Length: 126
Image (spheres, rainbow, N blue to C red):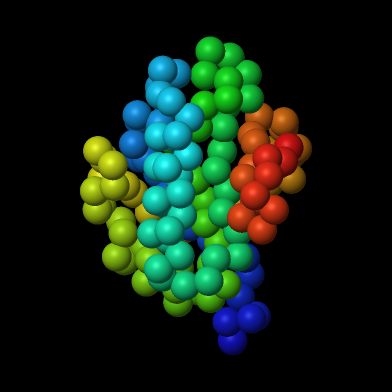
């Protein structure tokens, strides 16, 4: 039954992420370390199919994280378990929020405002 789930049934939005990672003066090591720790936390709940970290593409915050991420688990139950365990918990200096992700319509998907960090490729994609 898990294999029959739509990706939307296994995809979560993670918001209210630590604002320190969006400040321009932060050193690269701290930025990478924060997201690595987040990814390691998420992996404790099950196999991850995809991890999307979104960045501002233009404007004064260009290149900086948008303060939220998306994670898609292989199994819906792992996503549910992670949401139940992590929502509202302190990570960095903020209590993170975890919700089921909403599907973006095709028009919104084509607007070039986001960079994506794909877990499988570990590279930035448009």
